[in-house]
Length: 225
Figure (cartoon, rainbow, N blue to C red):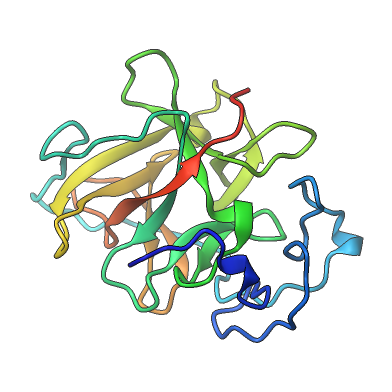
């Protein structure tokens, strides 16, 4: 998929899989001009194709994924922004922060601005465990982090000590285009995207996740905290 970072000019599409927003917006709903979030009272109701993810039991399997360092998976540097795109899904969905603070999906062909750009920051130098932070979206000058909250994937205040925010990547080989793919594990849950674009969580086990992700470069990240 060819991603164009300037696609917000494509009539300010925001929050729905069928793009039907009016033209002329300067910033996406729920986001102020500085990249922060507006209070809920100032944000138009968001019709999302991504209801609350729910956790489900993992089916046992002997097919364990490989470590993230295997089979050519290169993790972006902390100063590199990227999209997390689900492989083999209709409309190439990417993860994005919704106006309600959940992490859902949005069609890869339509830009939600800074909300879909992330960065990976190791918990310690050289570590293979990370925090998945918003690359440019800031609230009070600080990024948000992906975390599990009440069995839902949310963007929450970053806390390096919180196990619910610990992110690991499990290499899954290459997709049809040759791009390296991986399982995304947050707080011990595998993140999955259904054929309909809905996000769900599955407790990590020996089975690979039902969704593989790939990195799509998206410029540089904002200042690190």
